[in-house]
Length: 168
Image: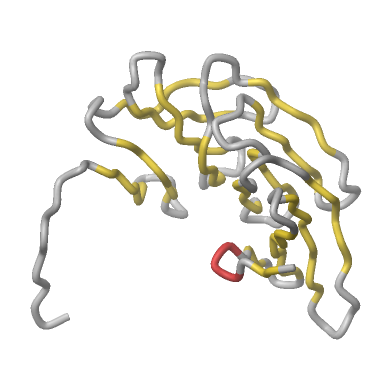
């Protein structure tokens, strides 16, 4: 069993860690509770190639993509571990993070023509394209600022640029 500490999500009282085990990339999500309480497995989740997930800023919900390039977002209530799935047809989904307002998740995808997009997906199933890129690029991650005015975006361009930063 291996812990993926780079993808740990924290709230004031809970830290969630994805664990991967076996050659088939079966995964389980655990909560590590602060204050000396025992660790508890939240749910056994399986998917080919691992999964992408994000804990809402208030710690009440998890949003997961259980299959890389699959078409479903799974939302899980942290309080009772209930889940429901949102089908996002025609969009291969990858990488996920909550929007700053907590009402939707931001998900990377591509159109049928290979154009990279960022989708806004709501737990009720509504979804729309928020950002469309150039076909020669690829979007990996997008994270919104707390006030929702800015985003940090990983865009892979295929260019090999070197930047020198002085007095950093």
